[in-house]
Image (cartoon, rainbow, N blue to C red; front, side, top):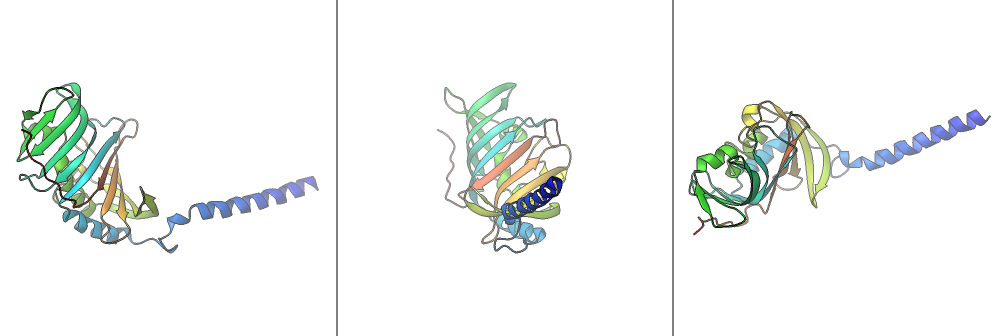
Length: 237
């Protein structure tokens, strides 16, 4: 009798847990509780909207160690004005000439400037900075996020979720080495990539996370905000 009661109790408990888990994962459906939108359509809209972005605030975070990528973190503003490759300014933490560098950078008119904790800005060849990490590539339609969005393979819409208060759809897929190389230098193989795309409007990208197949399973996260907010970047005096 005690065994039968226990079995009934376990069955009831499992049924209760199943109900709770179902409620907790309800965001896996669409915004109205229905099915999620098609991933290919979302990515197509997002690619078109990303190609039209003229300026944005960005954050870049490298979680773990990515072989061949010297930057560890960066934050700043981007614009497609200010030279053939656009312009960027902000702060960065990276390996530079074999030493850890933490300071500010400006890339404008195809020239690059860096400023450490002391002293003023020093001009460096822009090609050198671009080989380490070129933040201006993020908004370049032919090299950056728009290009990656257009070339995601086997995409799947995983969930509807808020990202820092912004309702988004989370879409996961794969990107080839050639497609991702400008966004994440040093990657020498295909990668898994996850995008968070706005639910409203033209599904602008809010965040991209690249899972790099390397020891420790590092990721590179790029987040965009303040899209098309006026940005003026000039060479330091």
